[in-house]
Length: 46
Image (cartoon, rainbow, N blue to C red):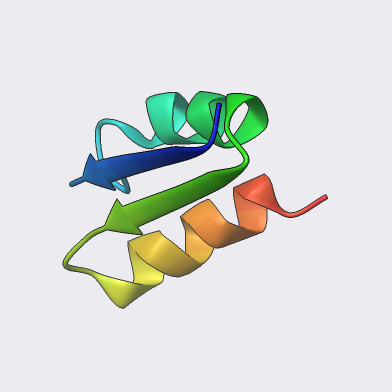
């Protein structure tokens, strides 16, 4: 699979965002809060 676009994926959907990041080559997450986005980024770094 190549790319996933997730809107609002840093809040309630963060588990789904982490799973999609493990399944797709590229994942784009759009969120409002930098703190939540930074935490999501930390969760997906290998």
